[in-house]
Image (cartoon, rainbow, N blue to C red; front, top):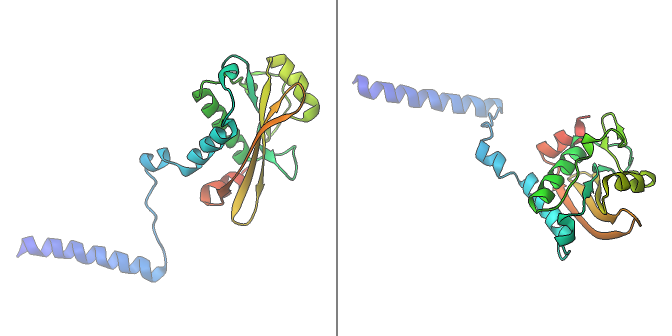
Length: 186
């Protein structure tokens, strides 16, 4: 009898717990797993954006010529960004390096335009000077614009000597909990 009573008591406790959470409207979401984090659609979307930006481009010269990645900025104020813009830029740079390109790390330099809470911003009047210091032929620049359901991101691959846009790619991120959190933090 004792063998049957314990499993029945455990089942009843689990049922009562489930009913209690349904009655209160409280849903306890399980913690995310490392496997889920590794398969992040956010990371995948950003890698795919870089792949689309580079599609059809001869990458061989970019394996030896330095490339810069500027912080992705808010389209409404190009002097500002949020953790979203800084995170996008970091992921773009990582993926470009993974593709074999010669990416220079701007944060190691003291002469880059860095404003507190913004990151490395490439203002057009400074682009040529910064590119010259780094011997960079190209720079990846971008903007983001948060809307009701999505955040729209525009990327451009720009020649540093002329300012000519040689590639562009636009994509959208869903305004899920992660994107909203990255937009709201300073």
